[in-house]
Length: 557
Ligand code: ADP
Image 1 (cartoon, rainbow, N blue to C red):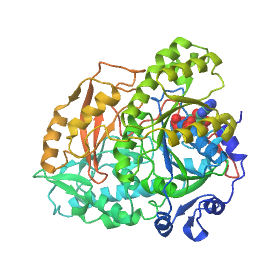
Image 2: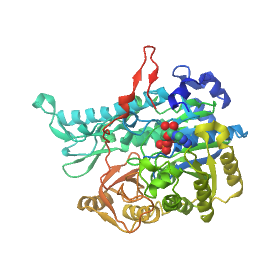
Image 3: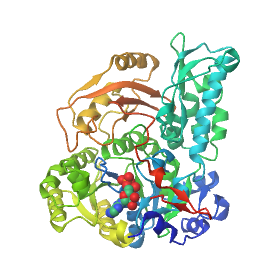
Image 4: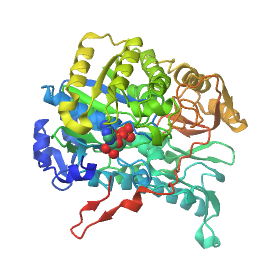
């Protein structure tokens, strides 16, 4: 089998104008970025709102393991397969961040014969959205520091600035820094730090904003610091929401690309699901919903993170719940959840599969708590044995959940026909009683955290640090105590300890700190030792990357 990039480079792409025509968009509706990428103009987005709304399929997964789950691969392959069975389908995905591309995770454009293209561009600079978000974020830092340097009219306590700088790289050296050194002409010295761009509140805002006015309103609400009297200071107080929105005026427009099989795909916005809310932009999902009869979209990491946040954070702003949820699992990953080492995954191991199934079972039950129809997709690997597949189907039957094999990585749309048919049938026949797991408007922050920990993670108690308890008290004073909560937690485990695989129980979750993201409209709860600026591994993926004399990418997976 060829590598992802070899398959991608051997594919001849249709001009993006042809892909746009498939969803009734003309040349005038597009802002072209070369031959194969385009942004959608606001007038077109407005016009599309009059089209009927398609069915929404949310693809999520078990807790990821180093064995790989292939969630993006299944999302893309399912979109292609639905088109193949005659259902007009559009895909909505997040855009990759360069940090993990250079690090360990690989790209976010799918794999094998289920990819969005041009994968090199999408995985590198794409249409510049990440850079625009980085610039807007850091413009805010510069304007904030300048305000203090120029006399600090707002009485900002420089020790209580919560706004950080960002860069779209994994760079642990920048987690904690000191700025403003060098005497009075070089600013006011203070402690600062960098997060990765995808953790920026501006990324979350771009993904949740419904138009430019909403973007401006949300930017204006960002809390950047506190005064010496402990009152919140916002972007609106600094009067710079207009400038920040201006920097983002193109980045907010959804990007259109295509799959290997020329299915239209909106790829836009990319918050991580472990430290942010983990879903592509509302504008992209909306554009997709108004362009196809079916929309396949993905939420980051497992159903405990991206899945939960899609349902609890994105759905209220999107104004539409999924019509079905697909949970992706691989036999290899389930065996890892059952205690098998990565090096031993190719050998058949039925008892480990049975033990590791507990992870999938927990996610199935969790998604059903929201009243949603669930289908399991087994992303098939060549090493899976017949007996393992049979056992997994049996275990799914015990949970009374439909299960289909997906071999889209190897066979493209042909490998996803059964899954596509099952999903269409599920949406047509199964009841959808979507509801939240808590009372969004009435439950306090701590009640929301506790519900997520008990109901979704399967934990016992929530332990709050002294700082977190003080924050809960002060948030009440500021009127933030009923906002949605965005959990920042390791993706590897249902608990806050990455080594606890399977479906752990009898564990507590520690909330170290809360971070208000009032512009995004939620409060981030930092659990365990999760970092908002990742580091690089010992052997980063960057070591394999190169470019030839014609500018072709080499070694990009
Ligand atoms: P996720 O979205 O879960 O992070 P991806 O879909 O991005 O996973 O896939 C990660 C990597 O695994 C990709 O390089 C892809 O080519 C590979 N992969 C996915 N599915 C399969 C499969 N069935 N067999 C072999 N490799 C696969």
